[in-house]
Image 1 (cartoon, rainbow, N blue to C red):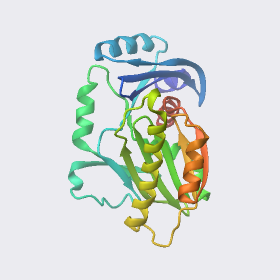
Image 2 (tube, rainbow, N blue to C red):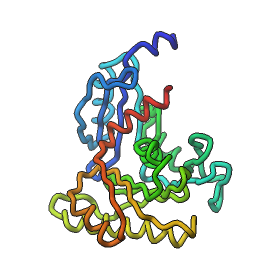
Image 3 (cartoon, rainbow, N blue to C red):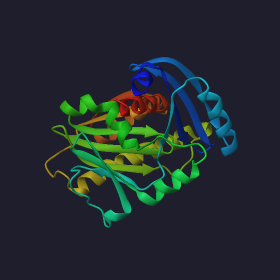
Length: 257
């Protein structure tokens, strides 16, 4: 049965919480290639979400559902053998590549499973995993601050000599609004400045000076964001646009290999 399943295309459904509800997206994939994509839609009620999910699942004999978890308390472990938190028993630890890791609040994970018990989640992904998956190759050779900008959050990690030294996830207080574009830009710039300041104060590596920022932007900011950061932080900024739902689908497929 496993062999037969491996030959079939698989539907990867992603759920991304937002201010308006849950953003629902899906890709039909086979052998690391997208065969078909289903346009993203925002669903406001649990009942409507369940109904739309069941409709999507008819598109394939095999389907998986992945949730992006941004609400739970979580962080990055530069050394997965050590849990540098006040009470390790309250956190679940996931090691990546037998080197670094992610910790996440256990109560929040249980709560999320309850929230989606009628749906059934196959994967719960941290934004740290997405950031790493987007920049894995660059992180092996380019030092600097790596950022993922999402709706309502920023996740960042400082990398030196291929090692992840420091990581943080910050929730943004101001909801996104098309009518507050300048205020939103200010908030994200100030938050990224705070991430740099916090890294230096944490003294994760007292000898390192951040000279370059690698930024994965899921919000489609214009060039003003890069210009502001370069002027105010005296750094080089290299930005790429990303689609979080697509990256989640790719990450889900990778988990099965």
